[in-house]
Length: 356
Image (cartoon, rainbow, N blue to C red):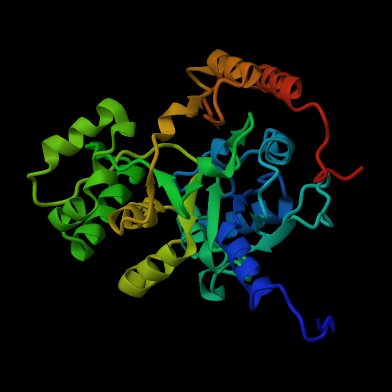
């Protein structure tokens, strides 16, 4: 028997490339945005483009930008409860928290100028930042977008965000009345959705996904509105949102003119589009796996539910929680200390993202 190792191989052809492709398909990145409103340079730039000296302008409040010092718990939660994440893309105007270990190999510091066209900078409009984030250098094909007020507080597997390679989401109609900027932008989104998709075709093609029993009683609205010929706004969970990068490519290819035109809004504007456009597009394409995000995700408006928020952190009742700030919160400093103590009770150890 010939035993020359150079001429005998028991391995299948090109296994390494196949394994790498499989690994790449399973890679999931996190994207999180952050701003330090106490930065004098940021304040100076903000004042220059807003034309007013204080932060309370253009519909912008302290609560939208102020930092309560909880960002380190965001990183601790990710490292302890979602260690499988491949990379964290940390988006800022160029600011870096002094405690952040920028040498961490899982951290990618991203400035706005790294992925947003220069002609739209500086921007103080989160929707502009969000529509271009798919251009972040090195971003994986599957990623989860976080606002910095959303925290992972108990073990959370990748299947919470992606199953069968597709984002986990809930496709349920909800009439969203109101005159706020957010409501108006949702309606703007739906105008583009109806321009690009036929509701009957979509719901017939992906019937099992639109009428999944996982949605519980929330699916009733889909049954009621099935005969209606046009899409209305969908239910929008306040959630860490999973995306396919290809979704952004598709939306830009179809509606790039609109997205480019509205990228000129340096501040939020009712004539703009919100990131739910990309989420709804993803759903209409059938590129999602049915999942009732309300089962393990909860938003707590701190102005009205502070005690419930603190309890949820301590008991780890949910996988993900949102701590929604408001300028009218009473006893703000005391509440922040109580929330910090709650975080310390479940995330006391420093993460590798914190410098010594």
